[in-house]
Image 1 (cartoon, rainbow, N blue to C red):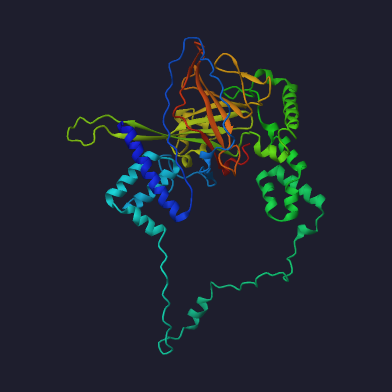
Image 2 (cartoon, rainbow, N blue to C red):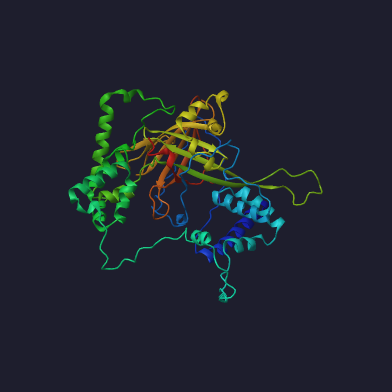
Length: 484
């Protein structure tokens, strides 16, 4: 077994042991998956790579994704420079290093977490027990205090007695069957007005509209009305008519010349509406089922891929050095933010999501294109690239030319992305597919199908291997709003 494989297996066994201890205390279920890095293959001369036989799509909900917990960035960007980590503090004791290592591991930064774990165990080999004693203290049976004798009780002063009652409040009597119900203004409204109110709410926020079913039984019936969900599915703000199934912009975000015709956009929108209406009742039984199950891009956040890989460092020339060549665990992230007009921002960086997601903005991308005006903390946008995206309808005859030369039949939910390259003569193409991780959310995962590089000067395609690239998972960002 090679040195990288041995270290990777030791790290995996340590993480599994730690996870089993946490499950015994909290009952939480957690799993881990290993990641690695990808290198491009040698490009062919003038002949694009042939497409491989398409495999059947994986199941909509995958078993290994049950542990996935999507992140939520509801707070604003952290103040200070991009080099500063949010919530950084001085690490003094072994317990401080251990807690920081767990936080880094939760973020997917395996290399940094491994370093902190080593420092913690060097300071205290029993730091894991200290952690359990701090966060999961054992419950000891309490011993009743002996009652104070009257002669030892001291009289309490009036100001102290008043202050002792400052935090108390008068609790109402517990409700029972005979307790009269409280007045509710909405209970007197007719059902017709409640339906109109629910439709207005659905137009503003679909999530709040769906949560109406938790209020009471009448609103639960209203939240399940097919007419309201039909309106949501056909809207451009939340529904499928806002998706783009053809290119709407260039890679540099310029308008396409053939789209300047005034009636072309209307024809495309009418075609999207006709296709959407034809999917009910087959294959989707209801409009609500379509909204939950049919693939669609989400704009109120970004998709993040966390990649970890192990590499061997340079061996030391000092013969006294123990252990041979060092082993490094490198962590980097891929970010994709989609916009409603068919454009997107692609970013590859080693910075953690909390330092990046609030700066994935069009204005900051244009601002940092000029290195003279780059400033912290959004200087990370210097390495961001413009791009465009489109979805596939998955219907017969709806094909897109691929890098393999032939027209590949795409499935419903396949996403094609084209971005700028590291040099103006290059263009990157990502072939992806929308999937679902877990049972609660939908369309929160994007898996790879292919990754290509195109040379505009020589008309050559080169394919990047997908051995080490990992899937993207959706994270909601409140500062994005609805992704306008």
